[in-house]
Length: 341
Image 1: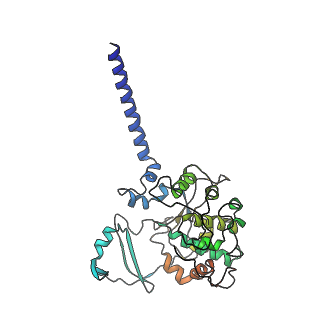
Image 2: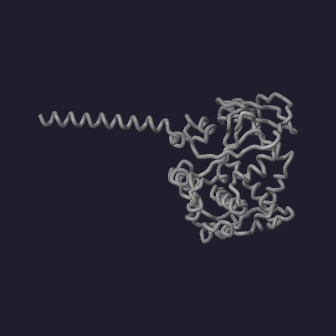
Image 3: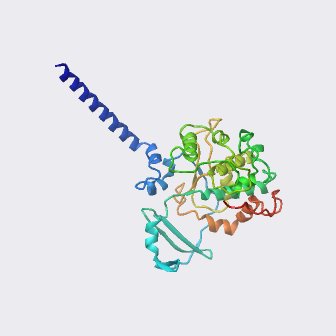
């Protein structure tokens, strides 16, 4: 009798646990956390990359002023391309690389525009690390405007929270060339890597980005070895914010996104909170260059490269940010980049 009762209790306990597990799974499946868990999953990656605002907090970079658009001169794409002396099918290449969109611009005019895997001209596309180039341009603009005195200034002079850390005496220029000498594990397949833990700490736990960066170690002197790490750009984002006194989203909107005539808002990733309990944009890692309109009056794609090339001096600002001899930069003119490892 006792054994029968114990068996019933065990079965009811297992049934209750099964119900709880199912309920937890269903809740997780409908929660914002699901997109983060499946961010790079093969079955979810394409859709996640079009809805990054569900994965990470974001704030719109507003558009402003007249919209600028490319001319159009439609032309067919070739069916094949040559690689290593052999012809290859172009459509097969798009399938193999999971291409979601292709925009071909020739002499200031769009010659081809197509979208794949459920995307269309209103879909947002995450820029990922292309945002680093935008950040470099903004650093150059900040130099030109006098917010940053010299690219040889140490990062710690602008970000007190990093003074005394591995980043404290790294010149801004060395972070721009990804040669800070600071160790940072950017293995996205390793759940415990520095990049994954940084986002968990910043997005989920509200730990200030500068606190995480301050805990990194130096493995070599700066300026001698290129090592592509997002922590360098995150440190530069903190420099930009401190030097200009503006949130990166606001500086981006007023210096680039609005003046270039973008058609749409561009969501910018931000952390959950900072030491002051205010969200902070993390322009160093990712921006979401959106094609979807941010207001009923806007539509279509914000075409960044042509507009910048046609109306702004971004390439000059990038040169300034790299200390390549632009006048008034305060940087080390003519420096050759560090040798690549």
